[in-house]
Image (cartoon, rainbow, N blue to C red):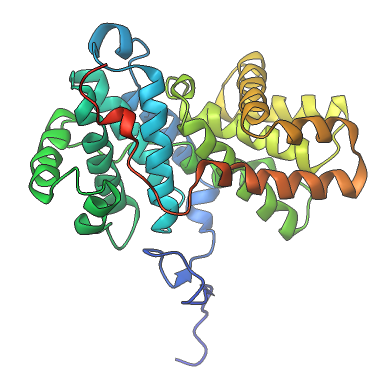
Length: 314
C-alpha cells in the first residue's frame, strides 16, 4: 500500500471554496489527450443554445437591463457563498434557456434566478446551496415553498436537461491542446483570468447567444494578450491554432475577443488604457491586479435584493 501512486493535490480545508472537494485531481490523459472528448463537447453545446430574440418574442415584461441586474445579484450571491467557478455560468445558462421557452412577470425574475443558482450548485458542487440562505439573500421576498415549486417548473421546462455545456468546460482542454510554452504559474494565471472573463461575459446577454467554445477560446486569447506581449505573428498563430481545434472561424474569434475587450473597457476602463501604454513586467502586473479587481466591482459587502426587479408596476 505504501507504494501506491497518489497524484491528487492537497488543498487547505480553510482556504478552499465551499462545496469544493478537499483534493484536486490531476489532468487525466485519457480525457485531455482524447480528441473525441473535445468533439463531443463541440457537438453537445448546440443543444443548449439560447433564443437570441427571447426579449422580443417570448418575454413581454422583461428587458436585457433587468436580466443584467439580476445577473449581477446572482454573481454576488455565488461569490458570497464561495461557489465553484462553474456554478454561476451554468445558472445563467439555465436562466436564459428557461426565459427562452416561458414568459414570466418582472416580479418573478429574481425567484427564477434563485432557483437556477440552486440547480446549478446541485450539478457542479458536492454541496448544494442552502435554500434558507437563498431566501435570506432575497431579503425573504422569496419563500422556501416558492423555490421548491419553481424548481420543479424550471427543470420540467428545460426537459430535465440541466447538464449544459458552458465555456468553463473548454478552458482546460483548450489550454492543454495549445501547449503554450510557459511556466506553471503563467498557465495558472491565464486559466484564472480566462475564468474571470467568462464570468463577466455571463452577466451580458449578448454573449449568451455565442457558442461556449467561442467564449472560452476568445477569453484565452484576451488573457494571453494581456499577460504576454505577443507579436502580430504570434497572435495570428494562436488564433489559427484555436481555429483548428474548435473549427471556429478566425474572424469570429477576433470579433468575440473584441467584444470581451469592450466589456472590460466598460467594467474597468483604466485596465484597457494602461495595458495599451505600459510594457514589460509592469504591464503584466497592472493587468493582473486590475483584472482581478474587474469582478469585484460587481460585488457589494452583502448581496442585496435589486428593488427594480421586484416592482410590478413600471
